[in-house]
Amino acid sequence: MAFVVDASVMLAQPLGQANRIATFARARLGNEAAVAPGLWWFEVRNVLIVNERRGIISEADTVRVLREWAQLDIAIDNVADEAGITTLARRHRLTVYDAAYLELAARRRLDLATLDASLAAAARLEGIRLVGDDTRSG
Image (tube, rainbow, N blue to C red):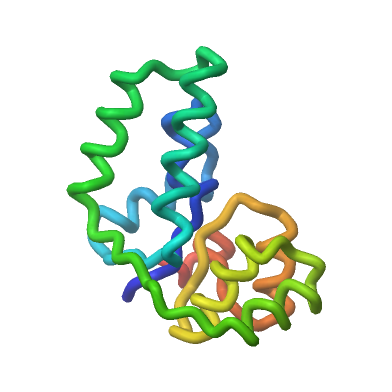
């Protein structure tokens, strides 16, 4: 079954911040599809470029990571429920960006993979399962 993947999960390994949840989600990507809101495309590239500027990764690293990700089954969902996103952002005091991941998971009834503590807490309150929370997530 597909799941929603946020930028924090995908960026953890390339930025040297891999952990159990990110590793588990990346393993699921080997067998399952993932979906992300349209902003994901811009978000991950921006973080990679910012980290190039900080000297954390090289331009070659960015090219390699994006090439690897292109081989993964990550679909971009450009359909967003504006009212739903703003409601979730207000209800859980999230950024609109984080609320977009939450809205997508809720709308498509999918698990969510995130390393963001606020987003994870909001997902739990909304009844959305988190990748890595228990053995049923995989």
